[in-house]
Length: 139
Image (cartoon, rainbow, N blue to C red; front, side, top):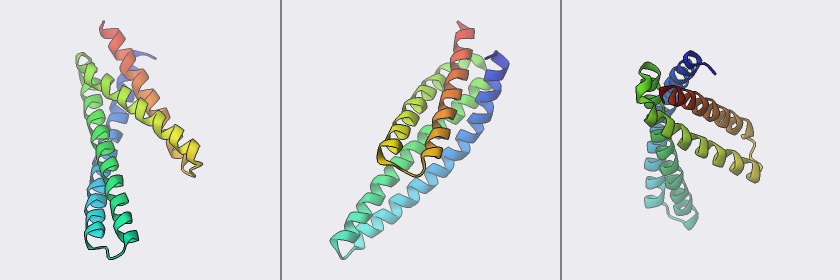
């Protein structure tokens, strides 16, 4: 992969990461709020349990959204100035690990959203490869 191609990949997927991160934060906050309300006003154990599950899912989505947002910001910044590649490279590794865990989890659960996990993992691999190419060219 060439240096210019790597910069384009980082820029494109960085912008996508920013958008996905913002959406993930919004959905995570909504799940936290809704789950908190359901857990606090629930009259049965089932309602309280579902509220707690929504809160946990909201926390996971919020953390995932923050990581995606940071990965996107650092990727766009590194695409403009390759000397600032290290934070993008670190978040690319985090994204790669997260994508692998999601992929394995979806396969083991027999989830129907396996194509989303494959796409997410493939994007993580591309971003990591691009960041790694830029990192190596700076050394």
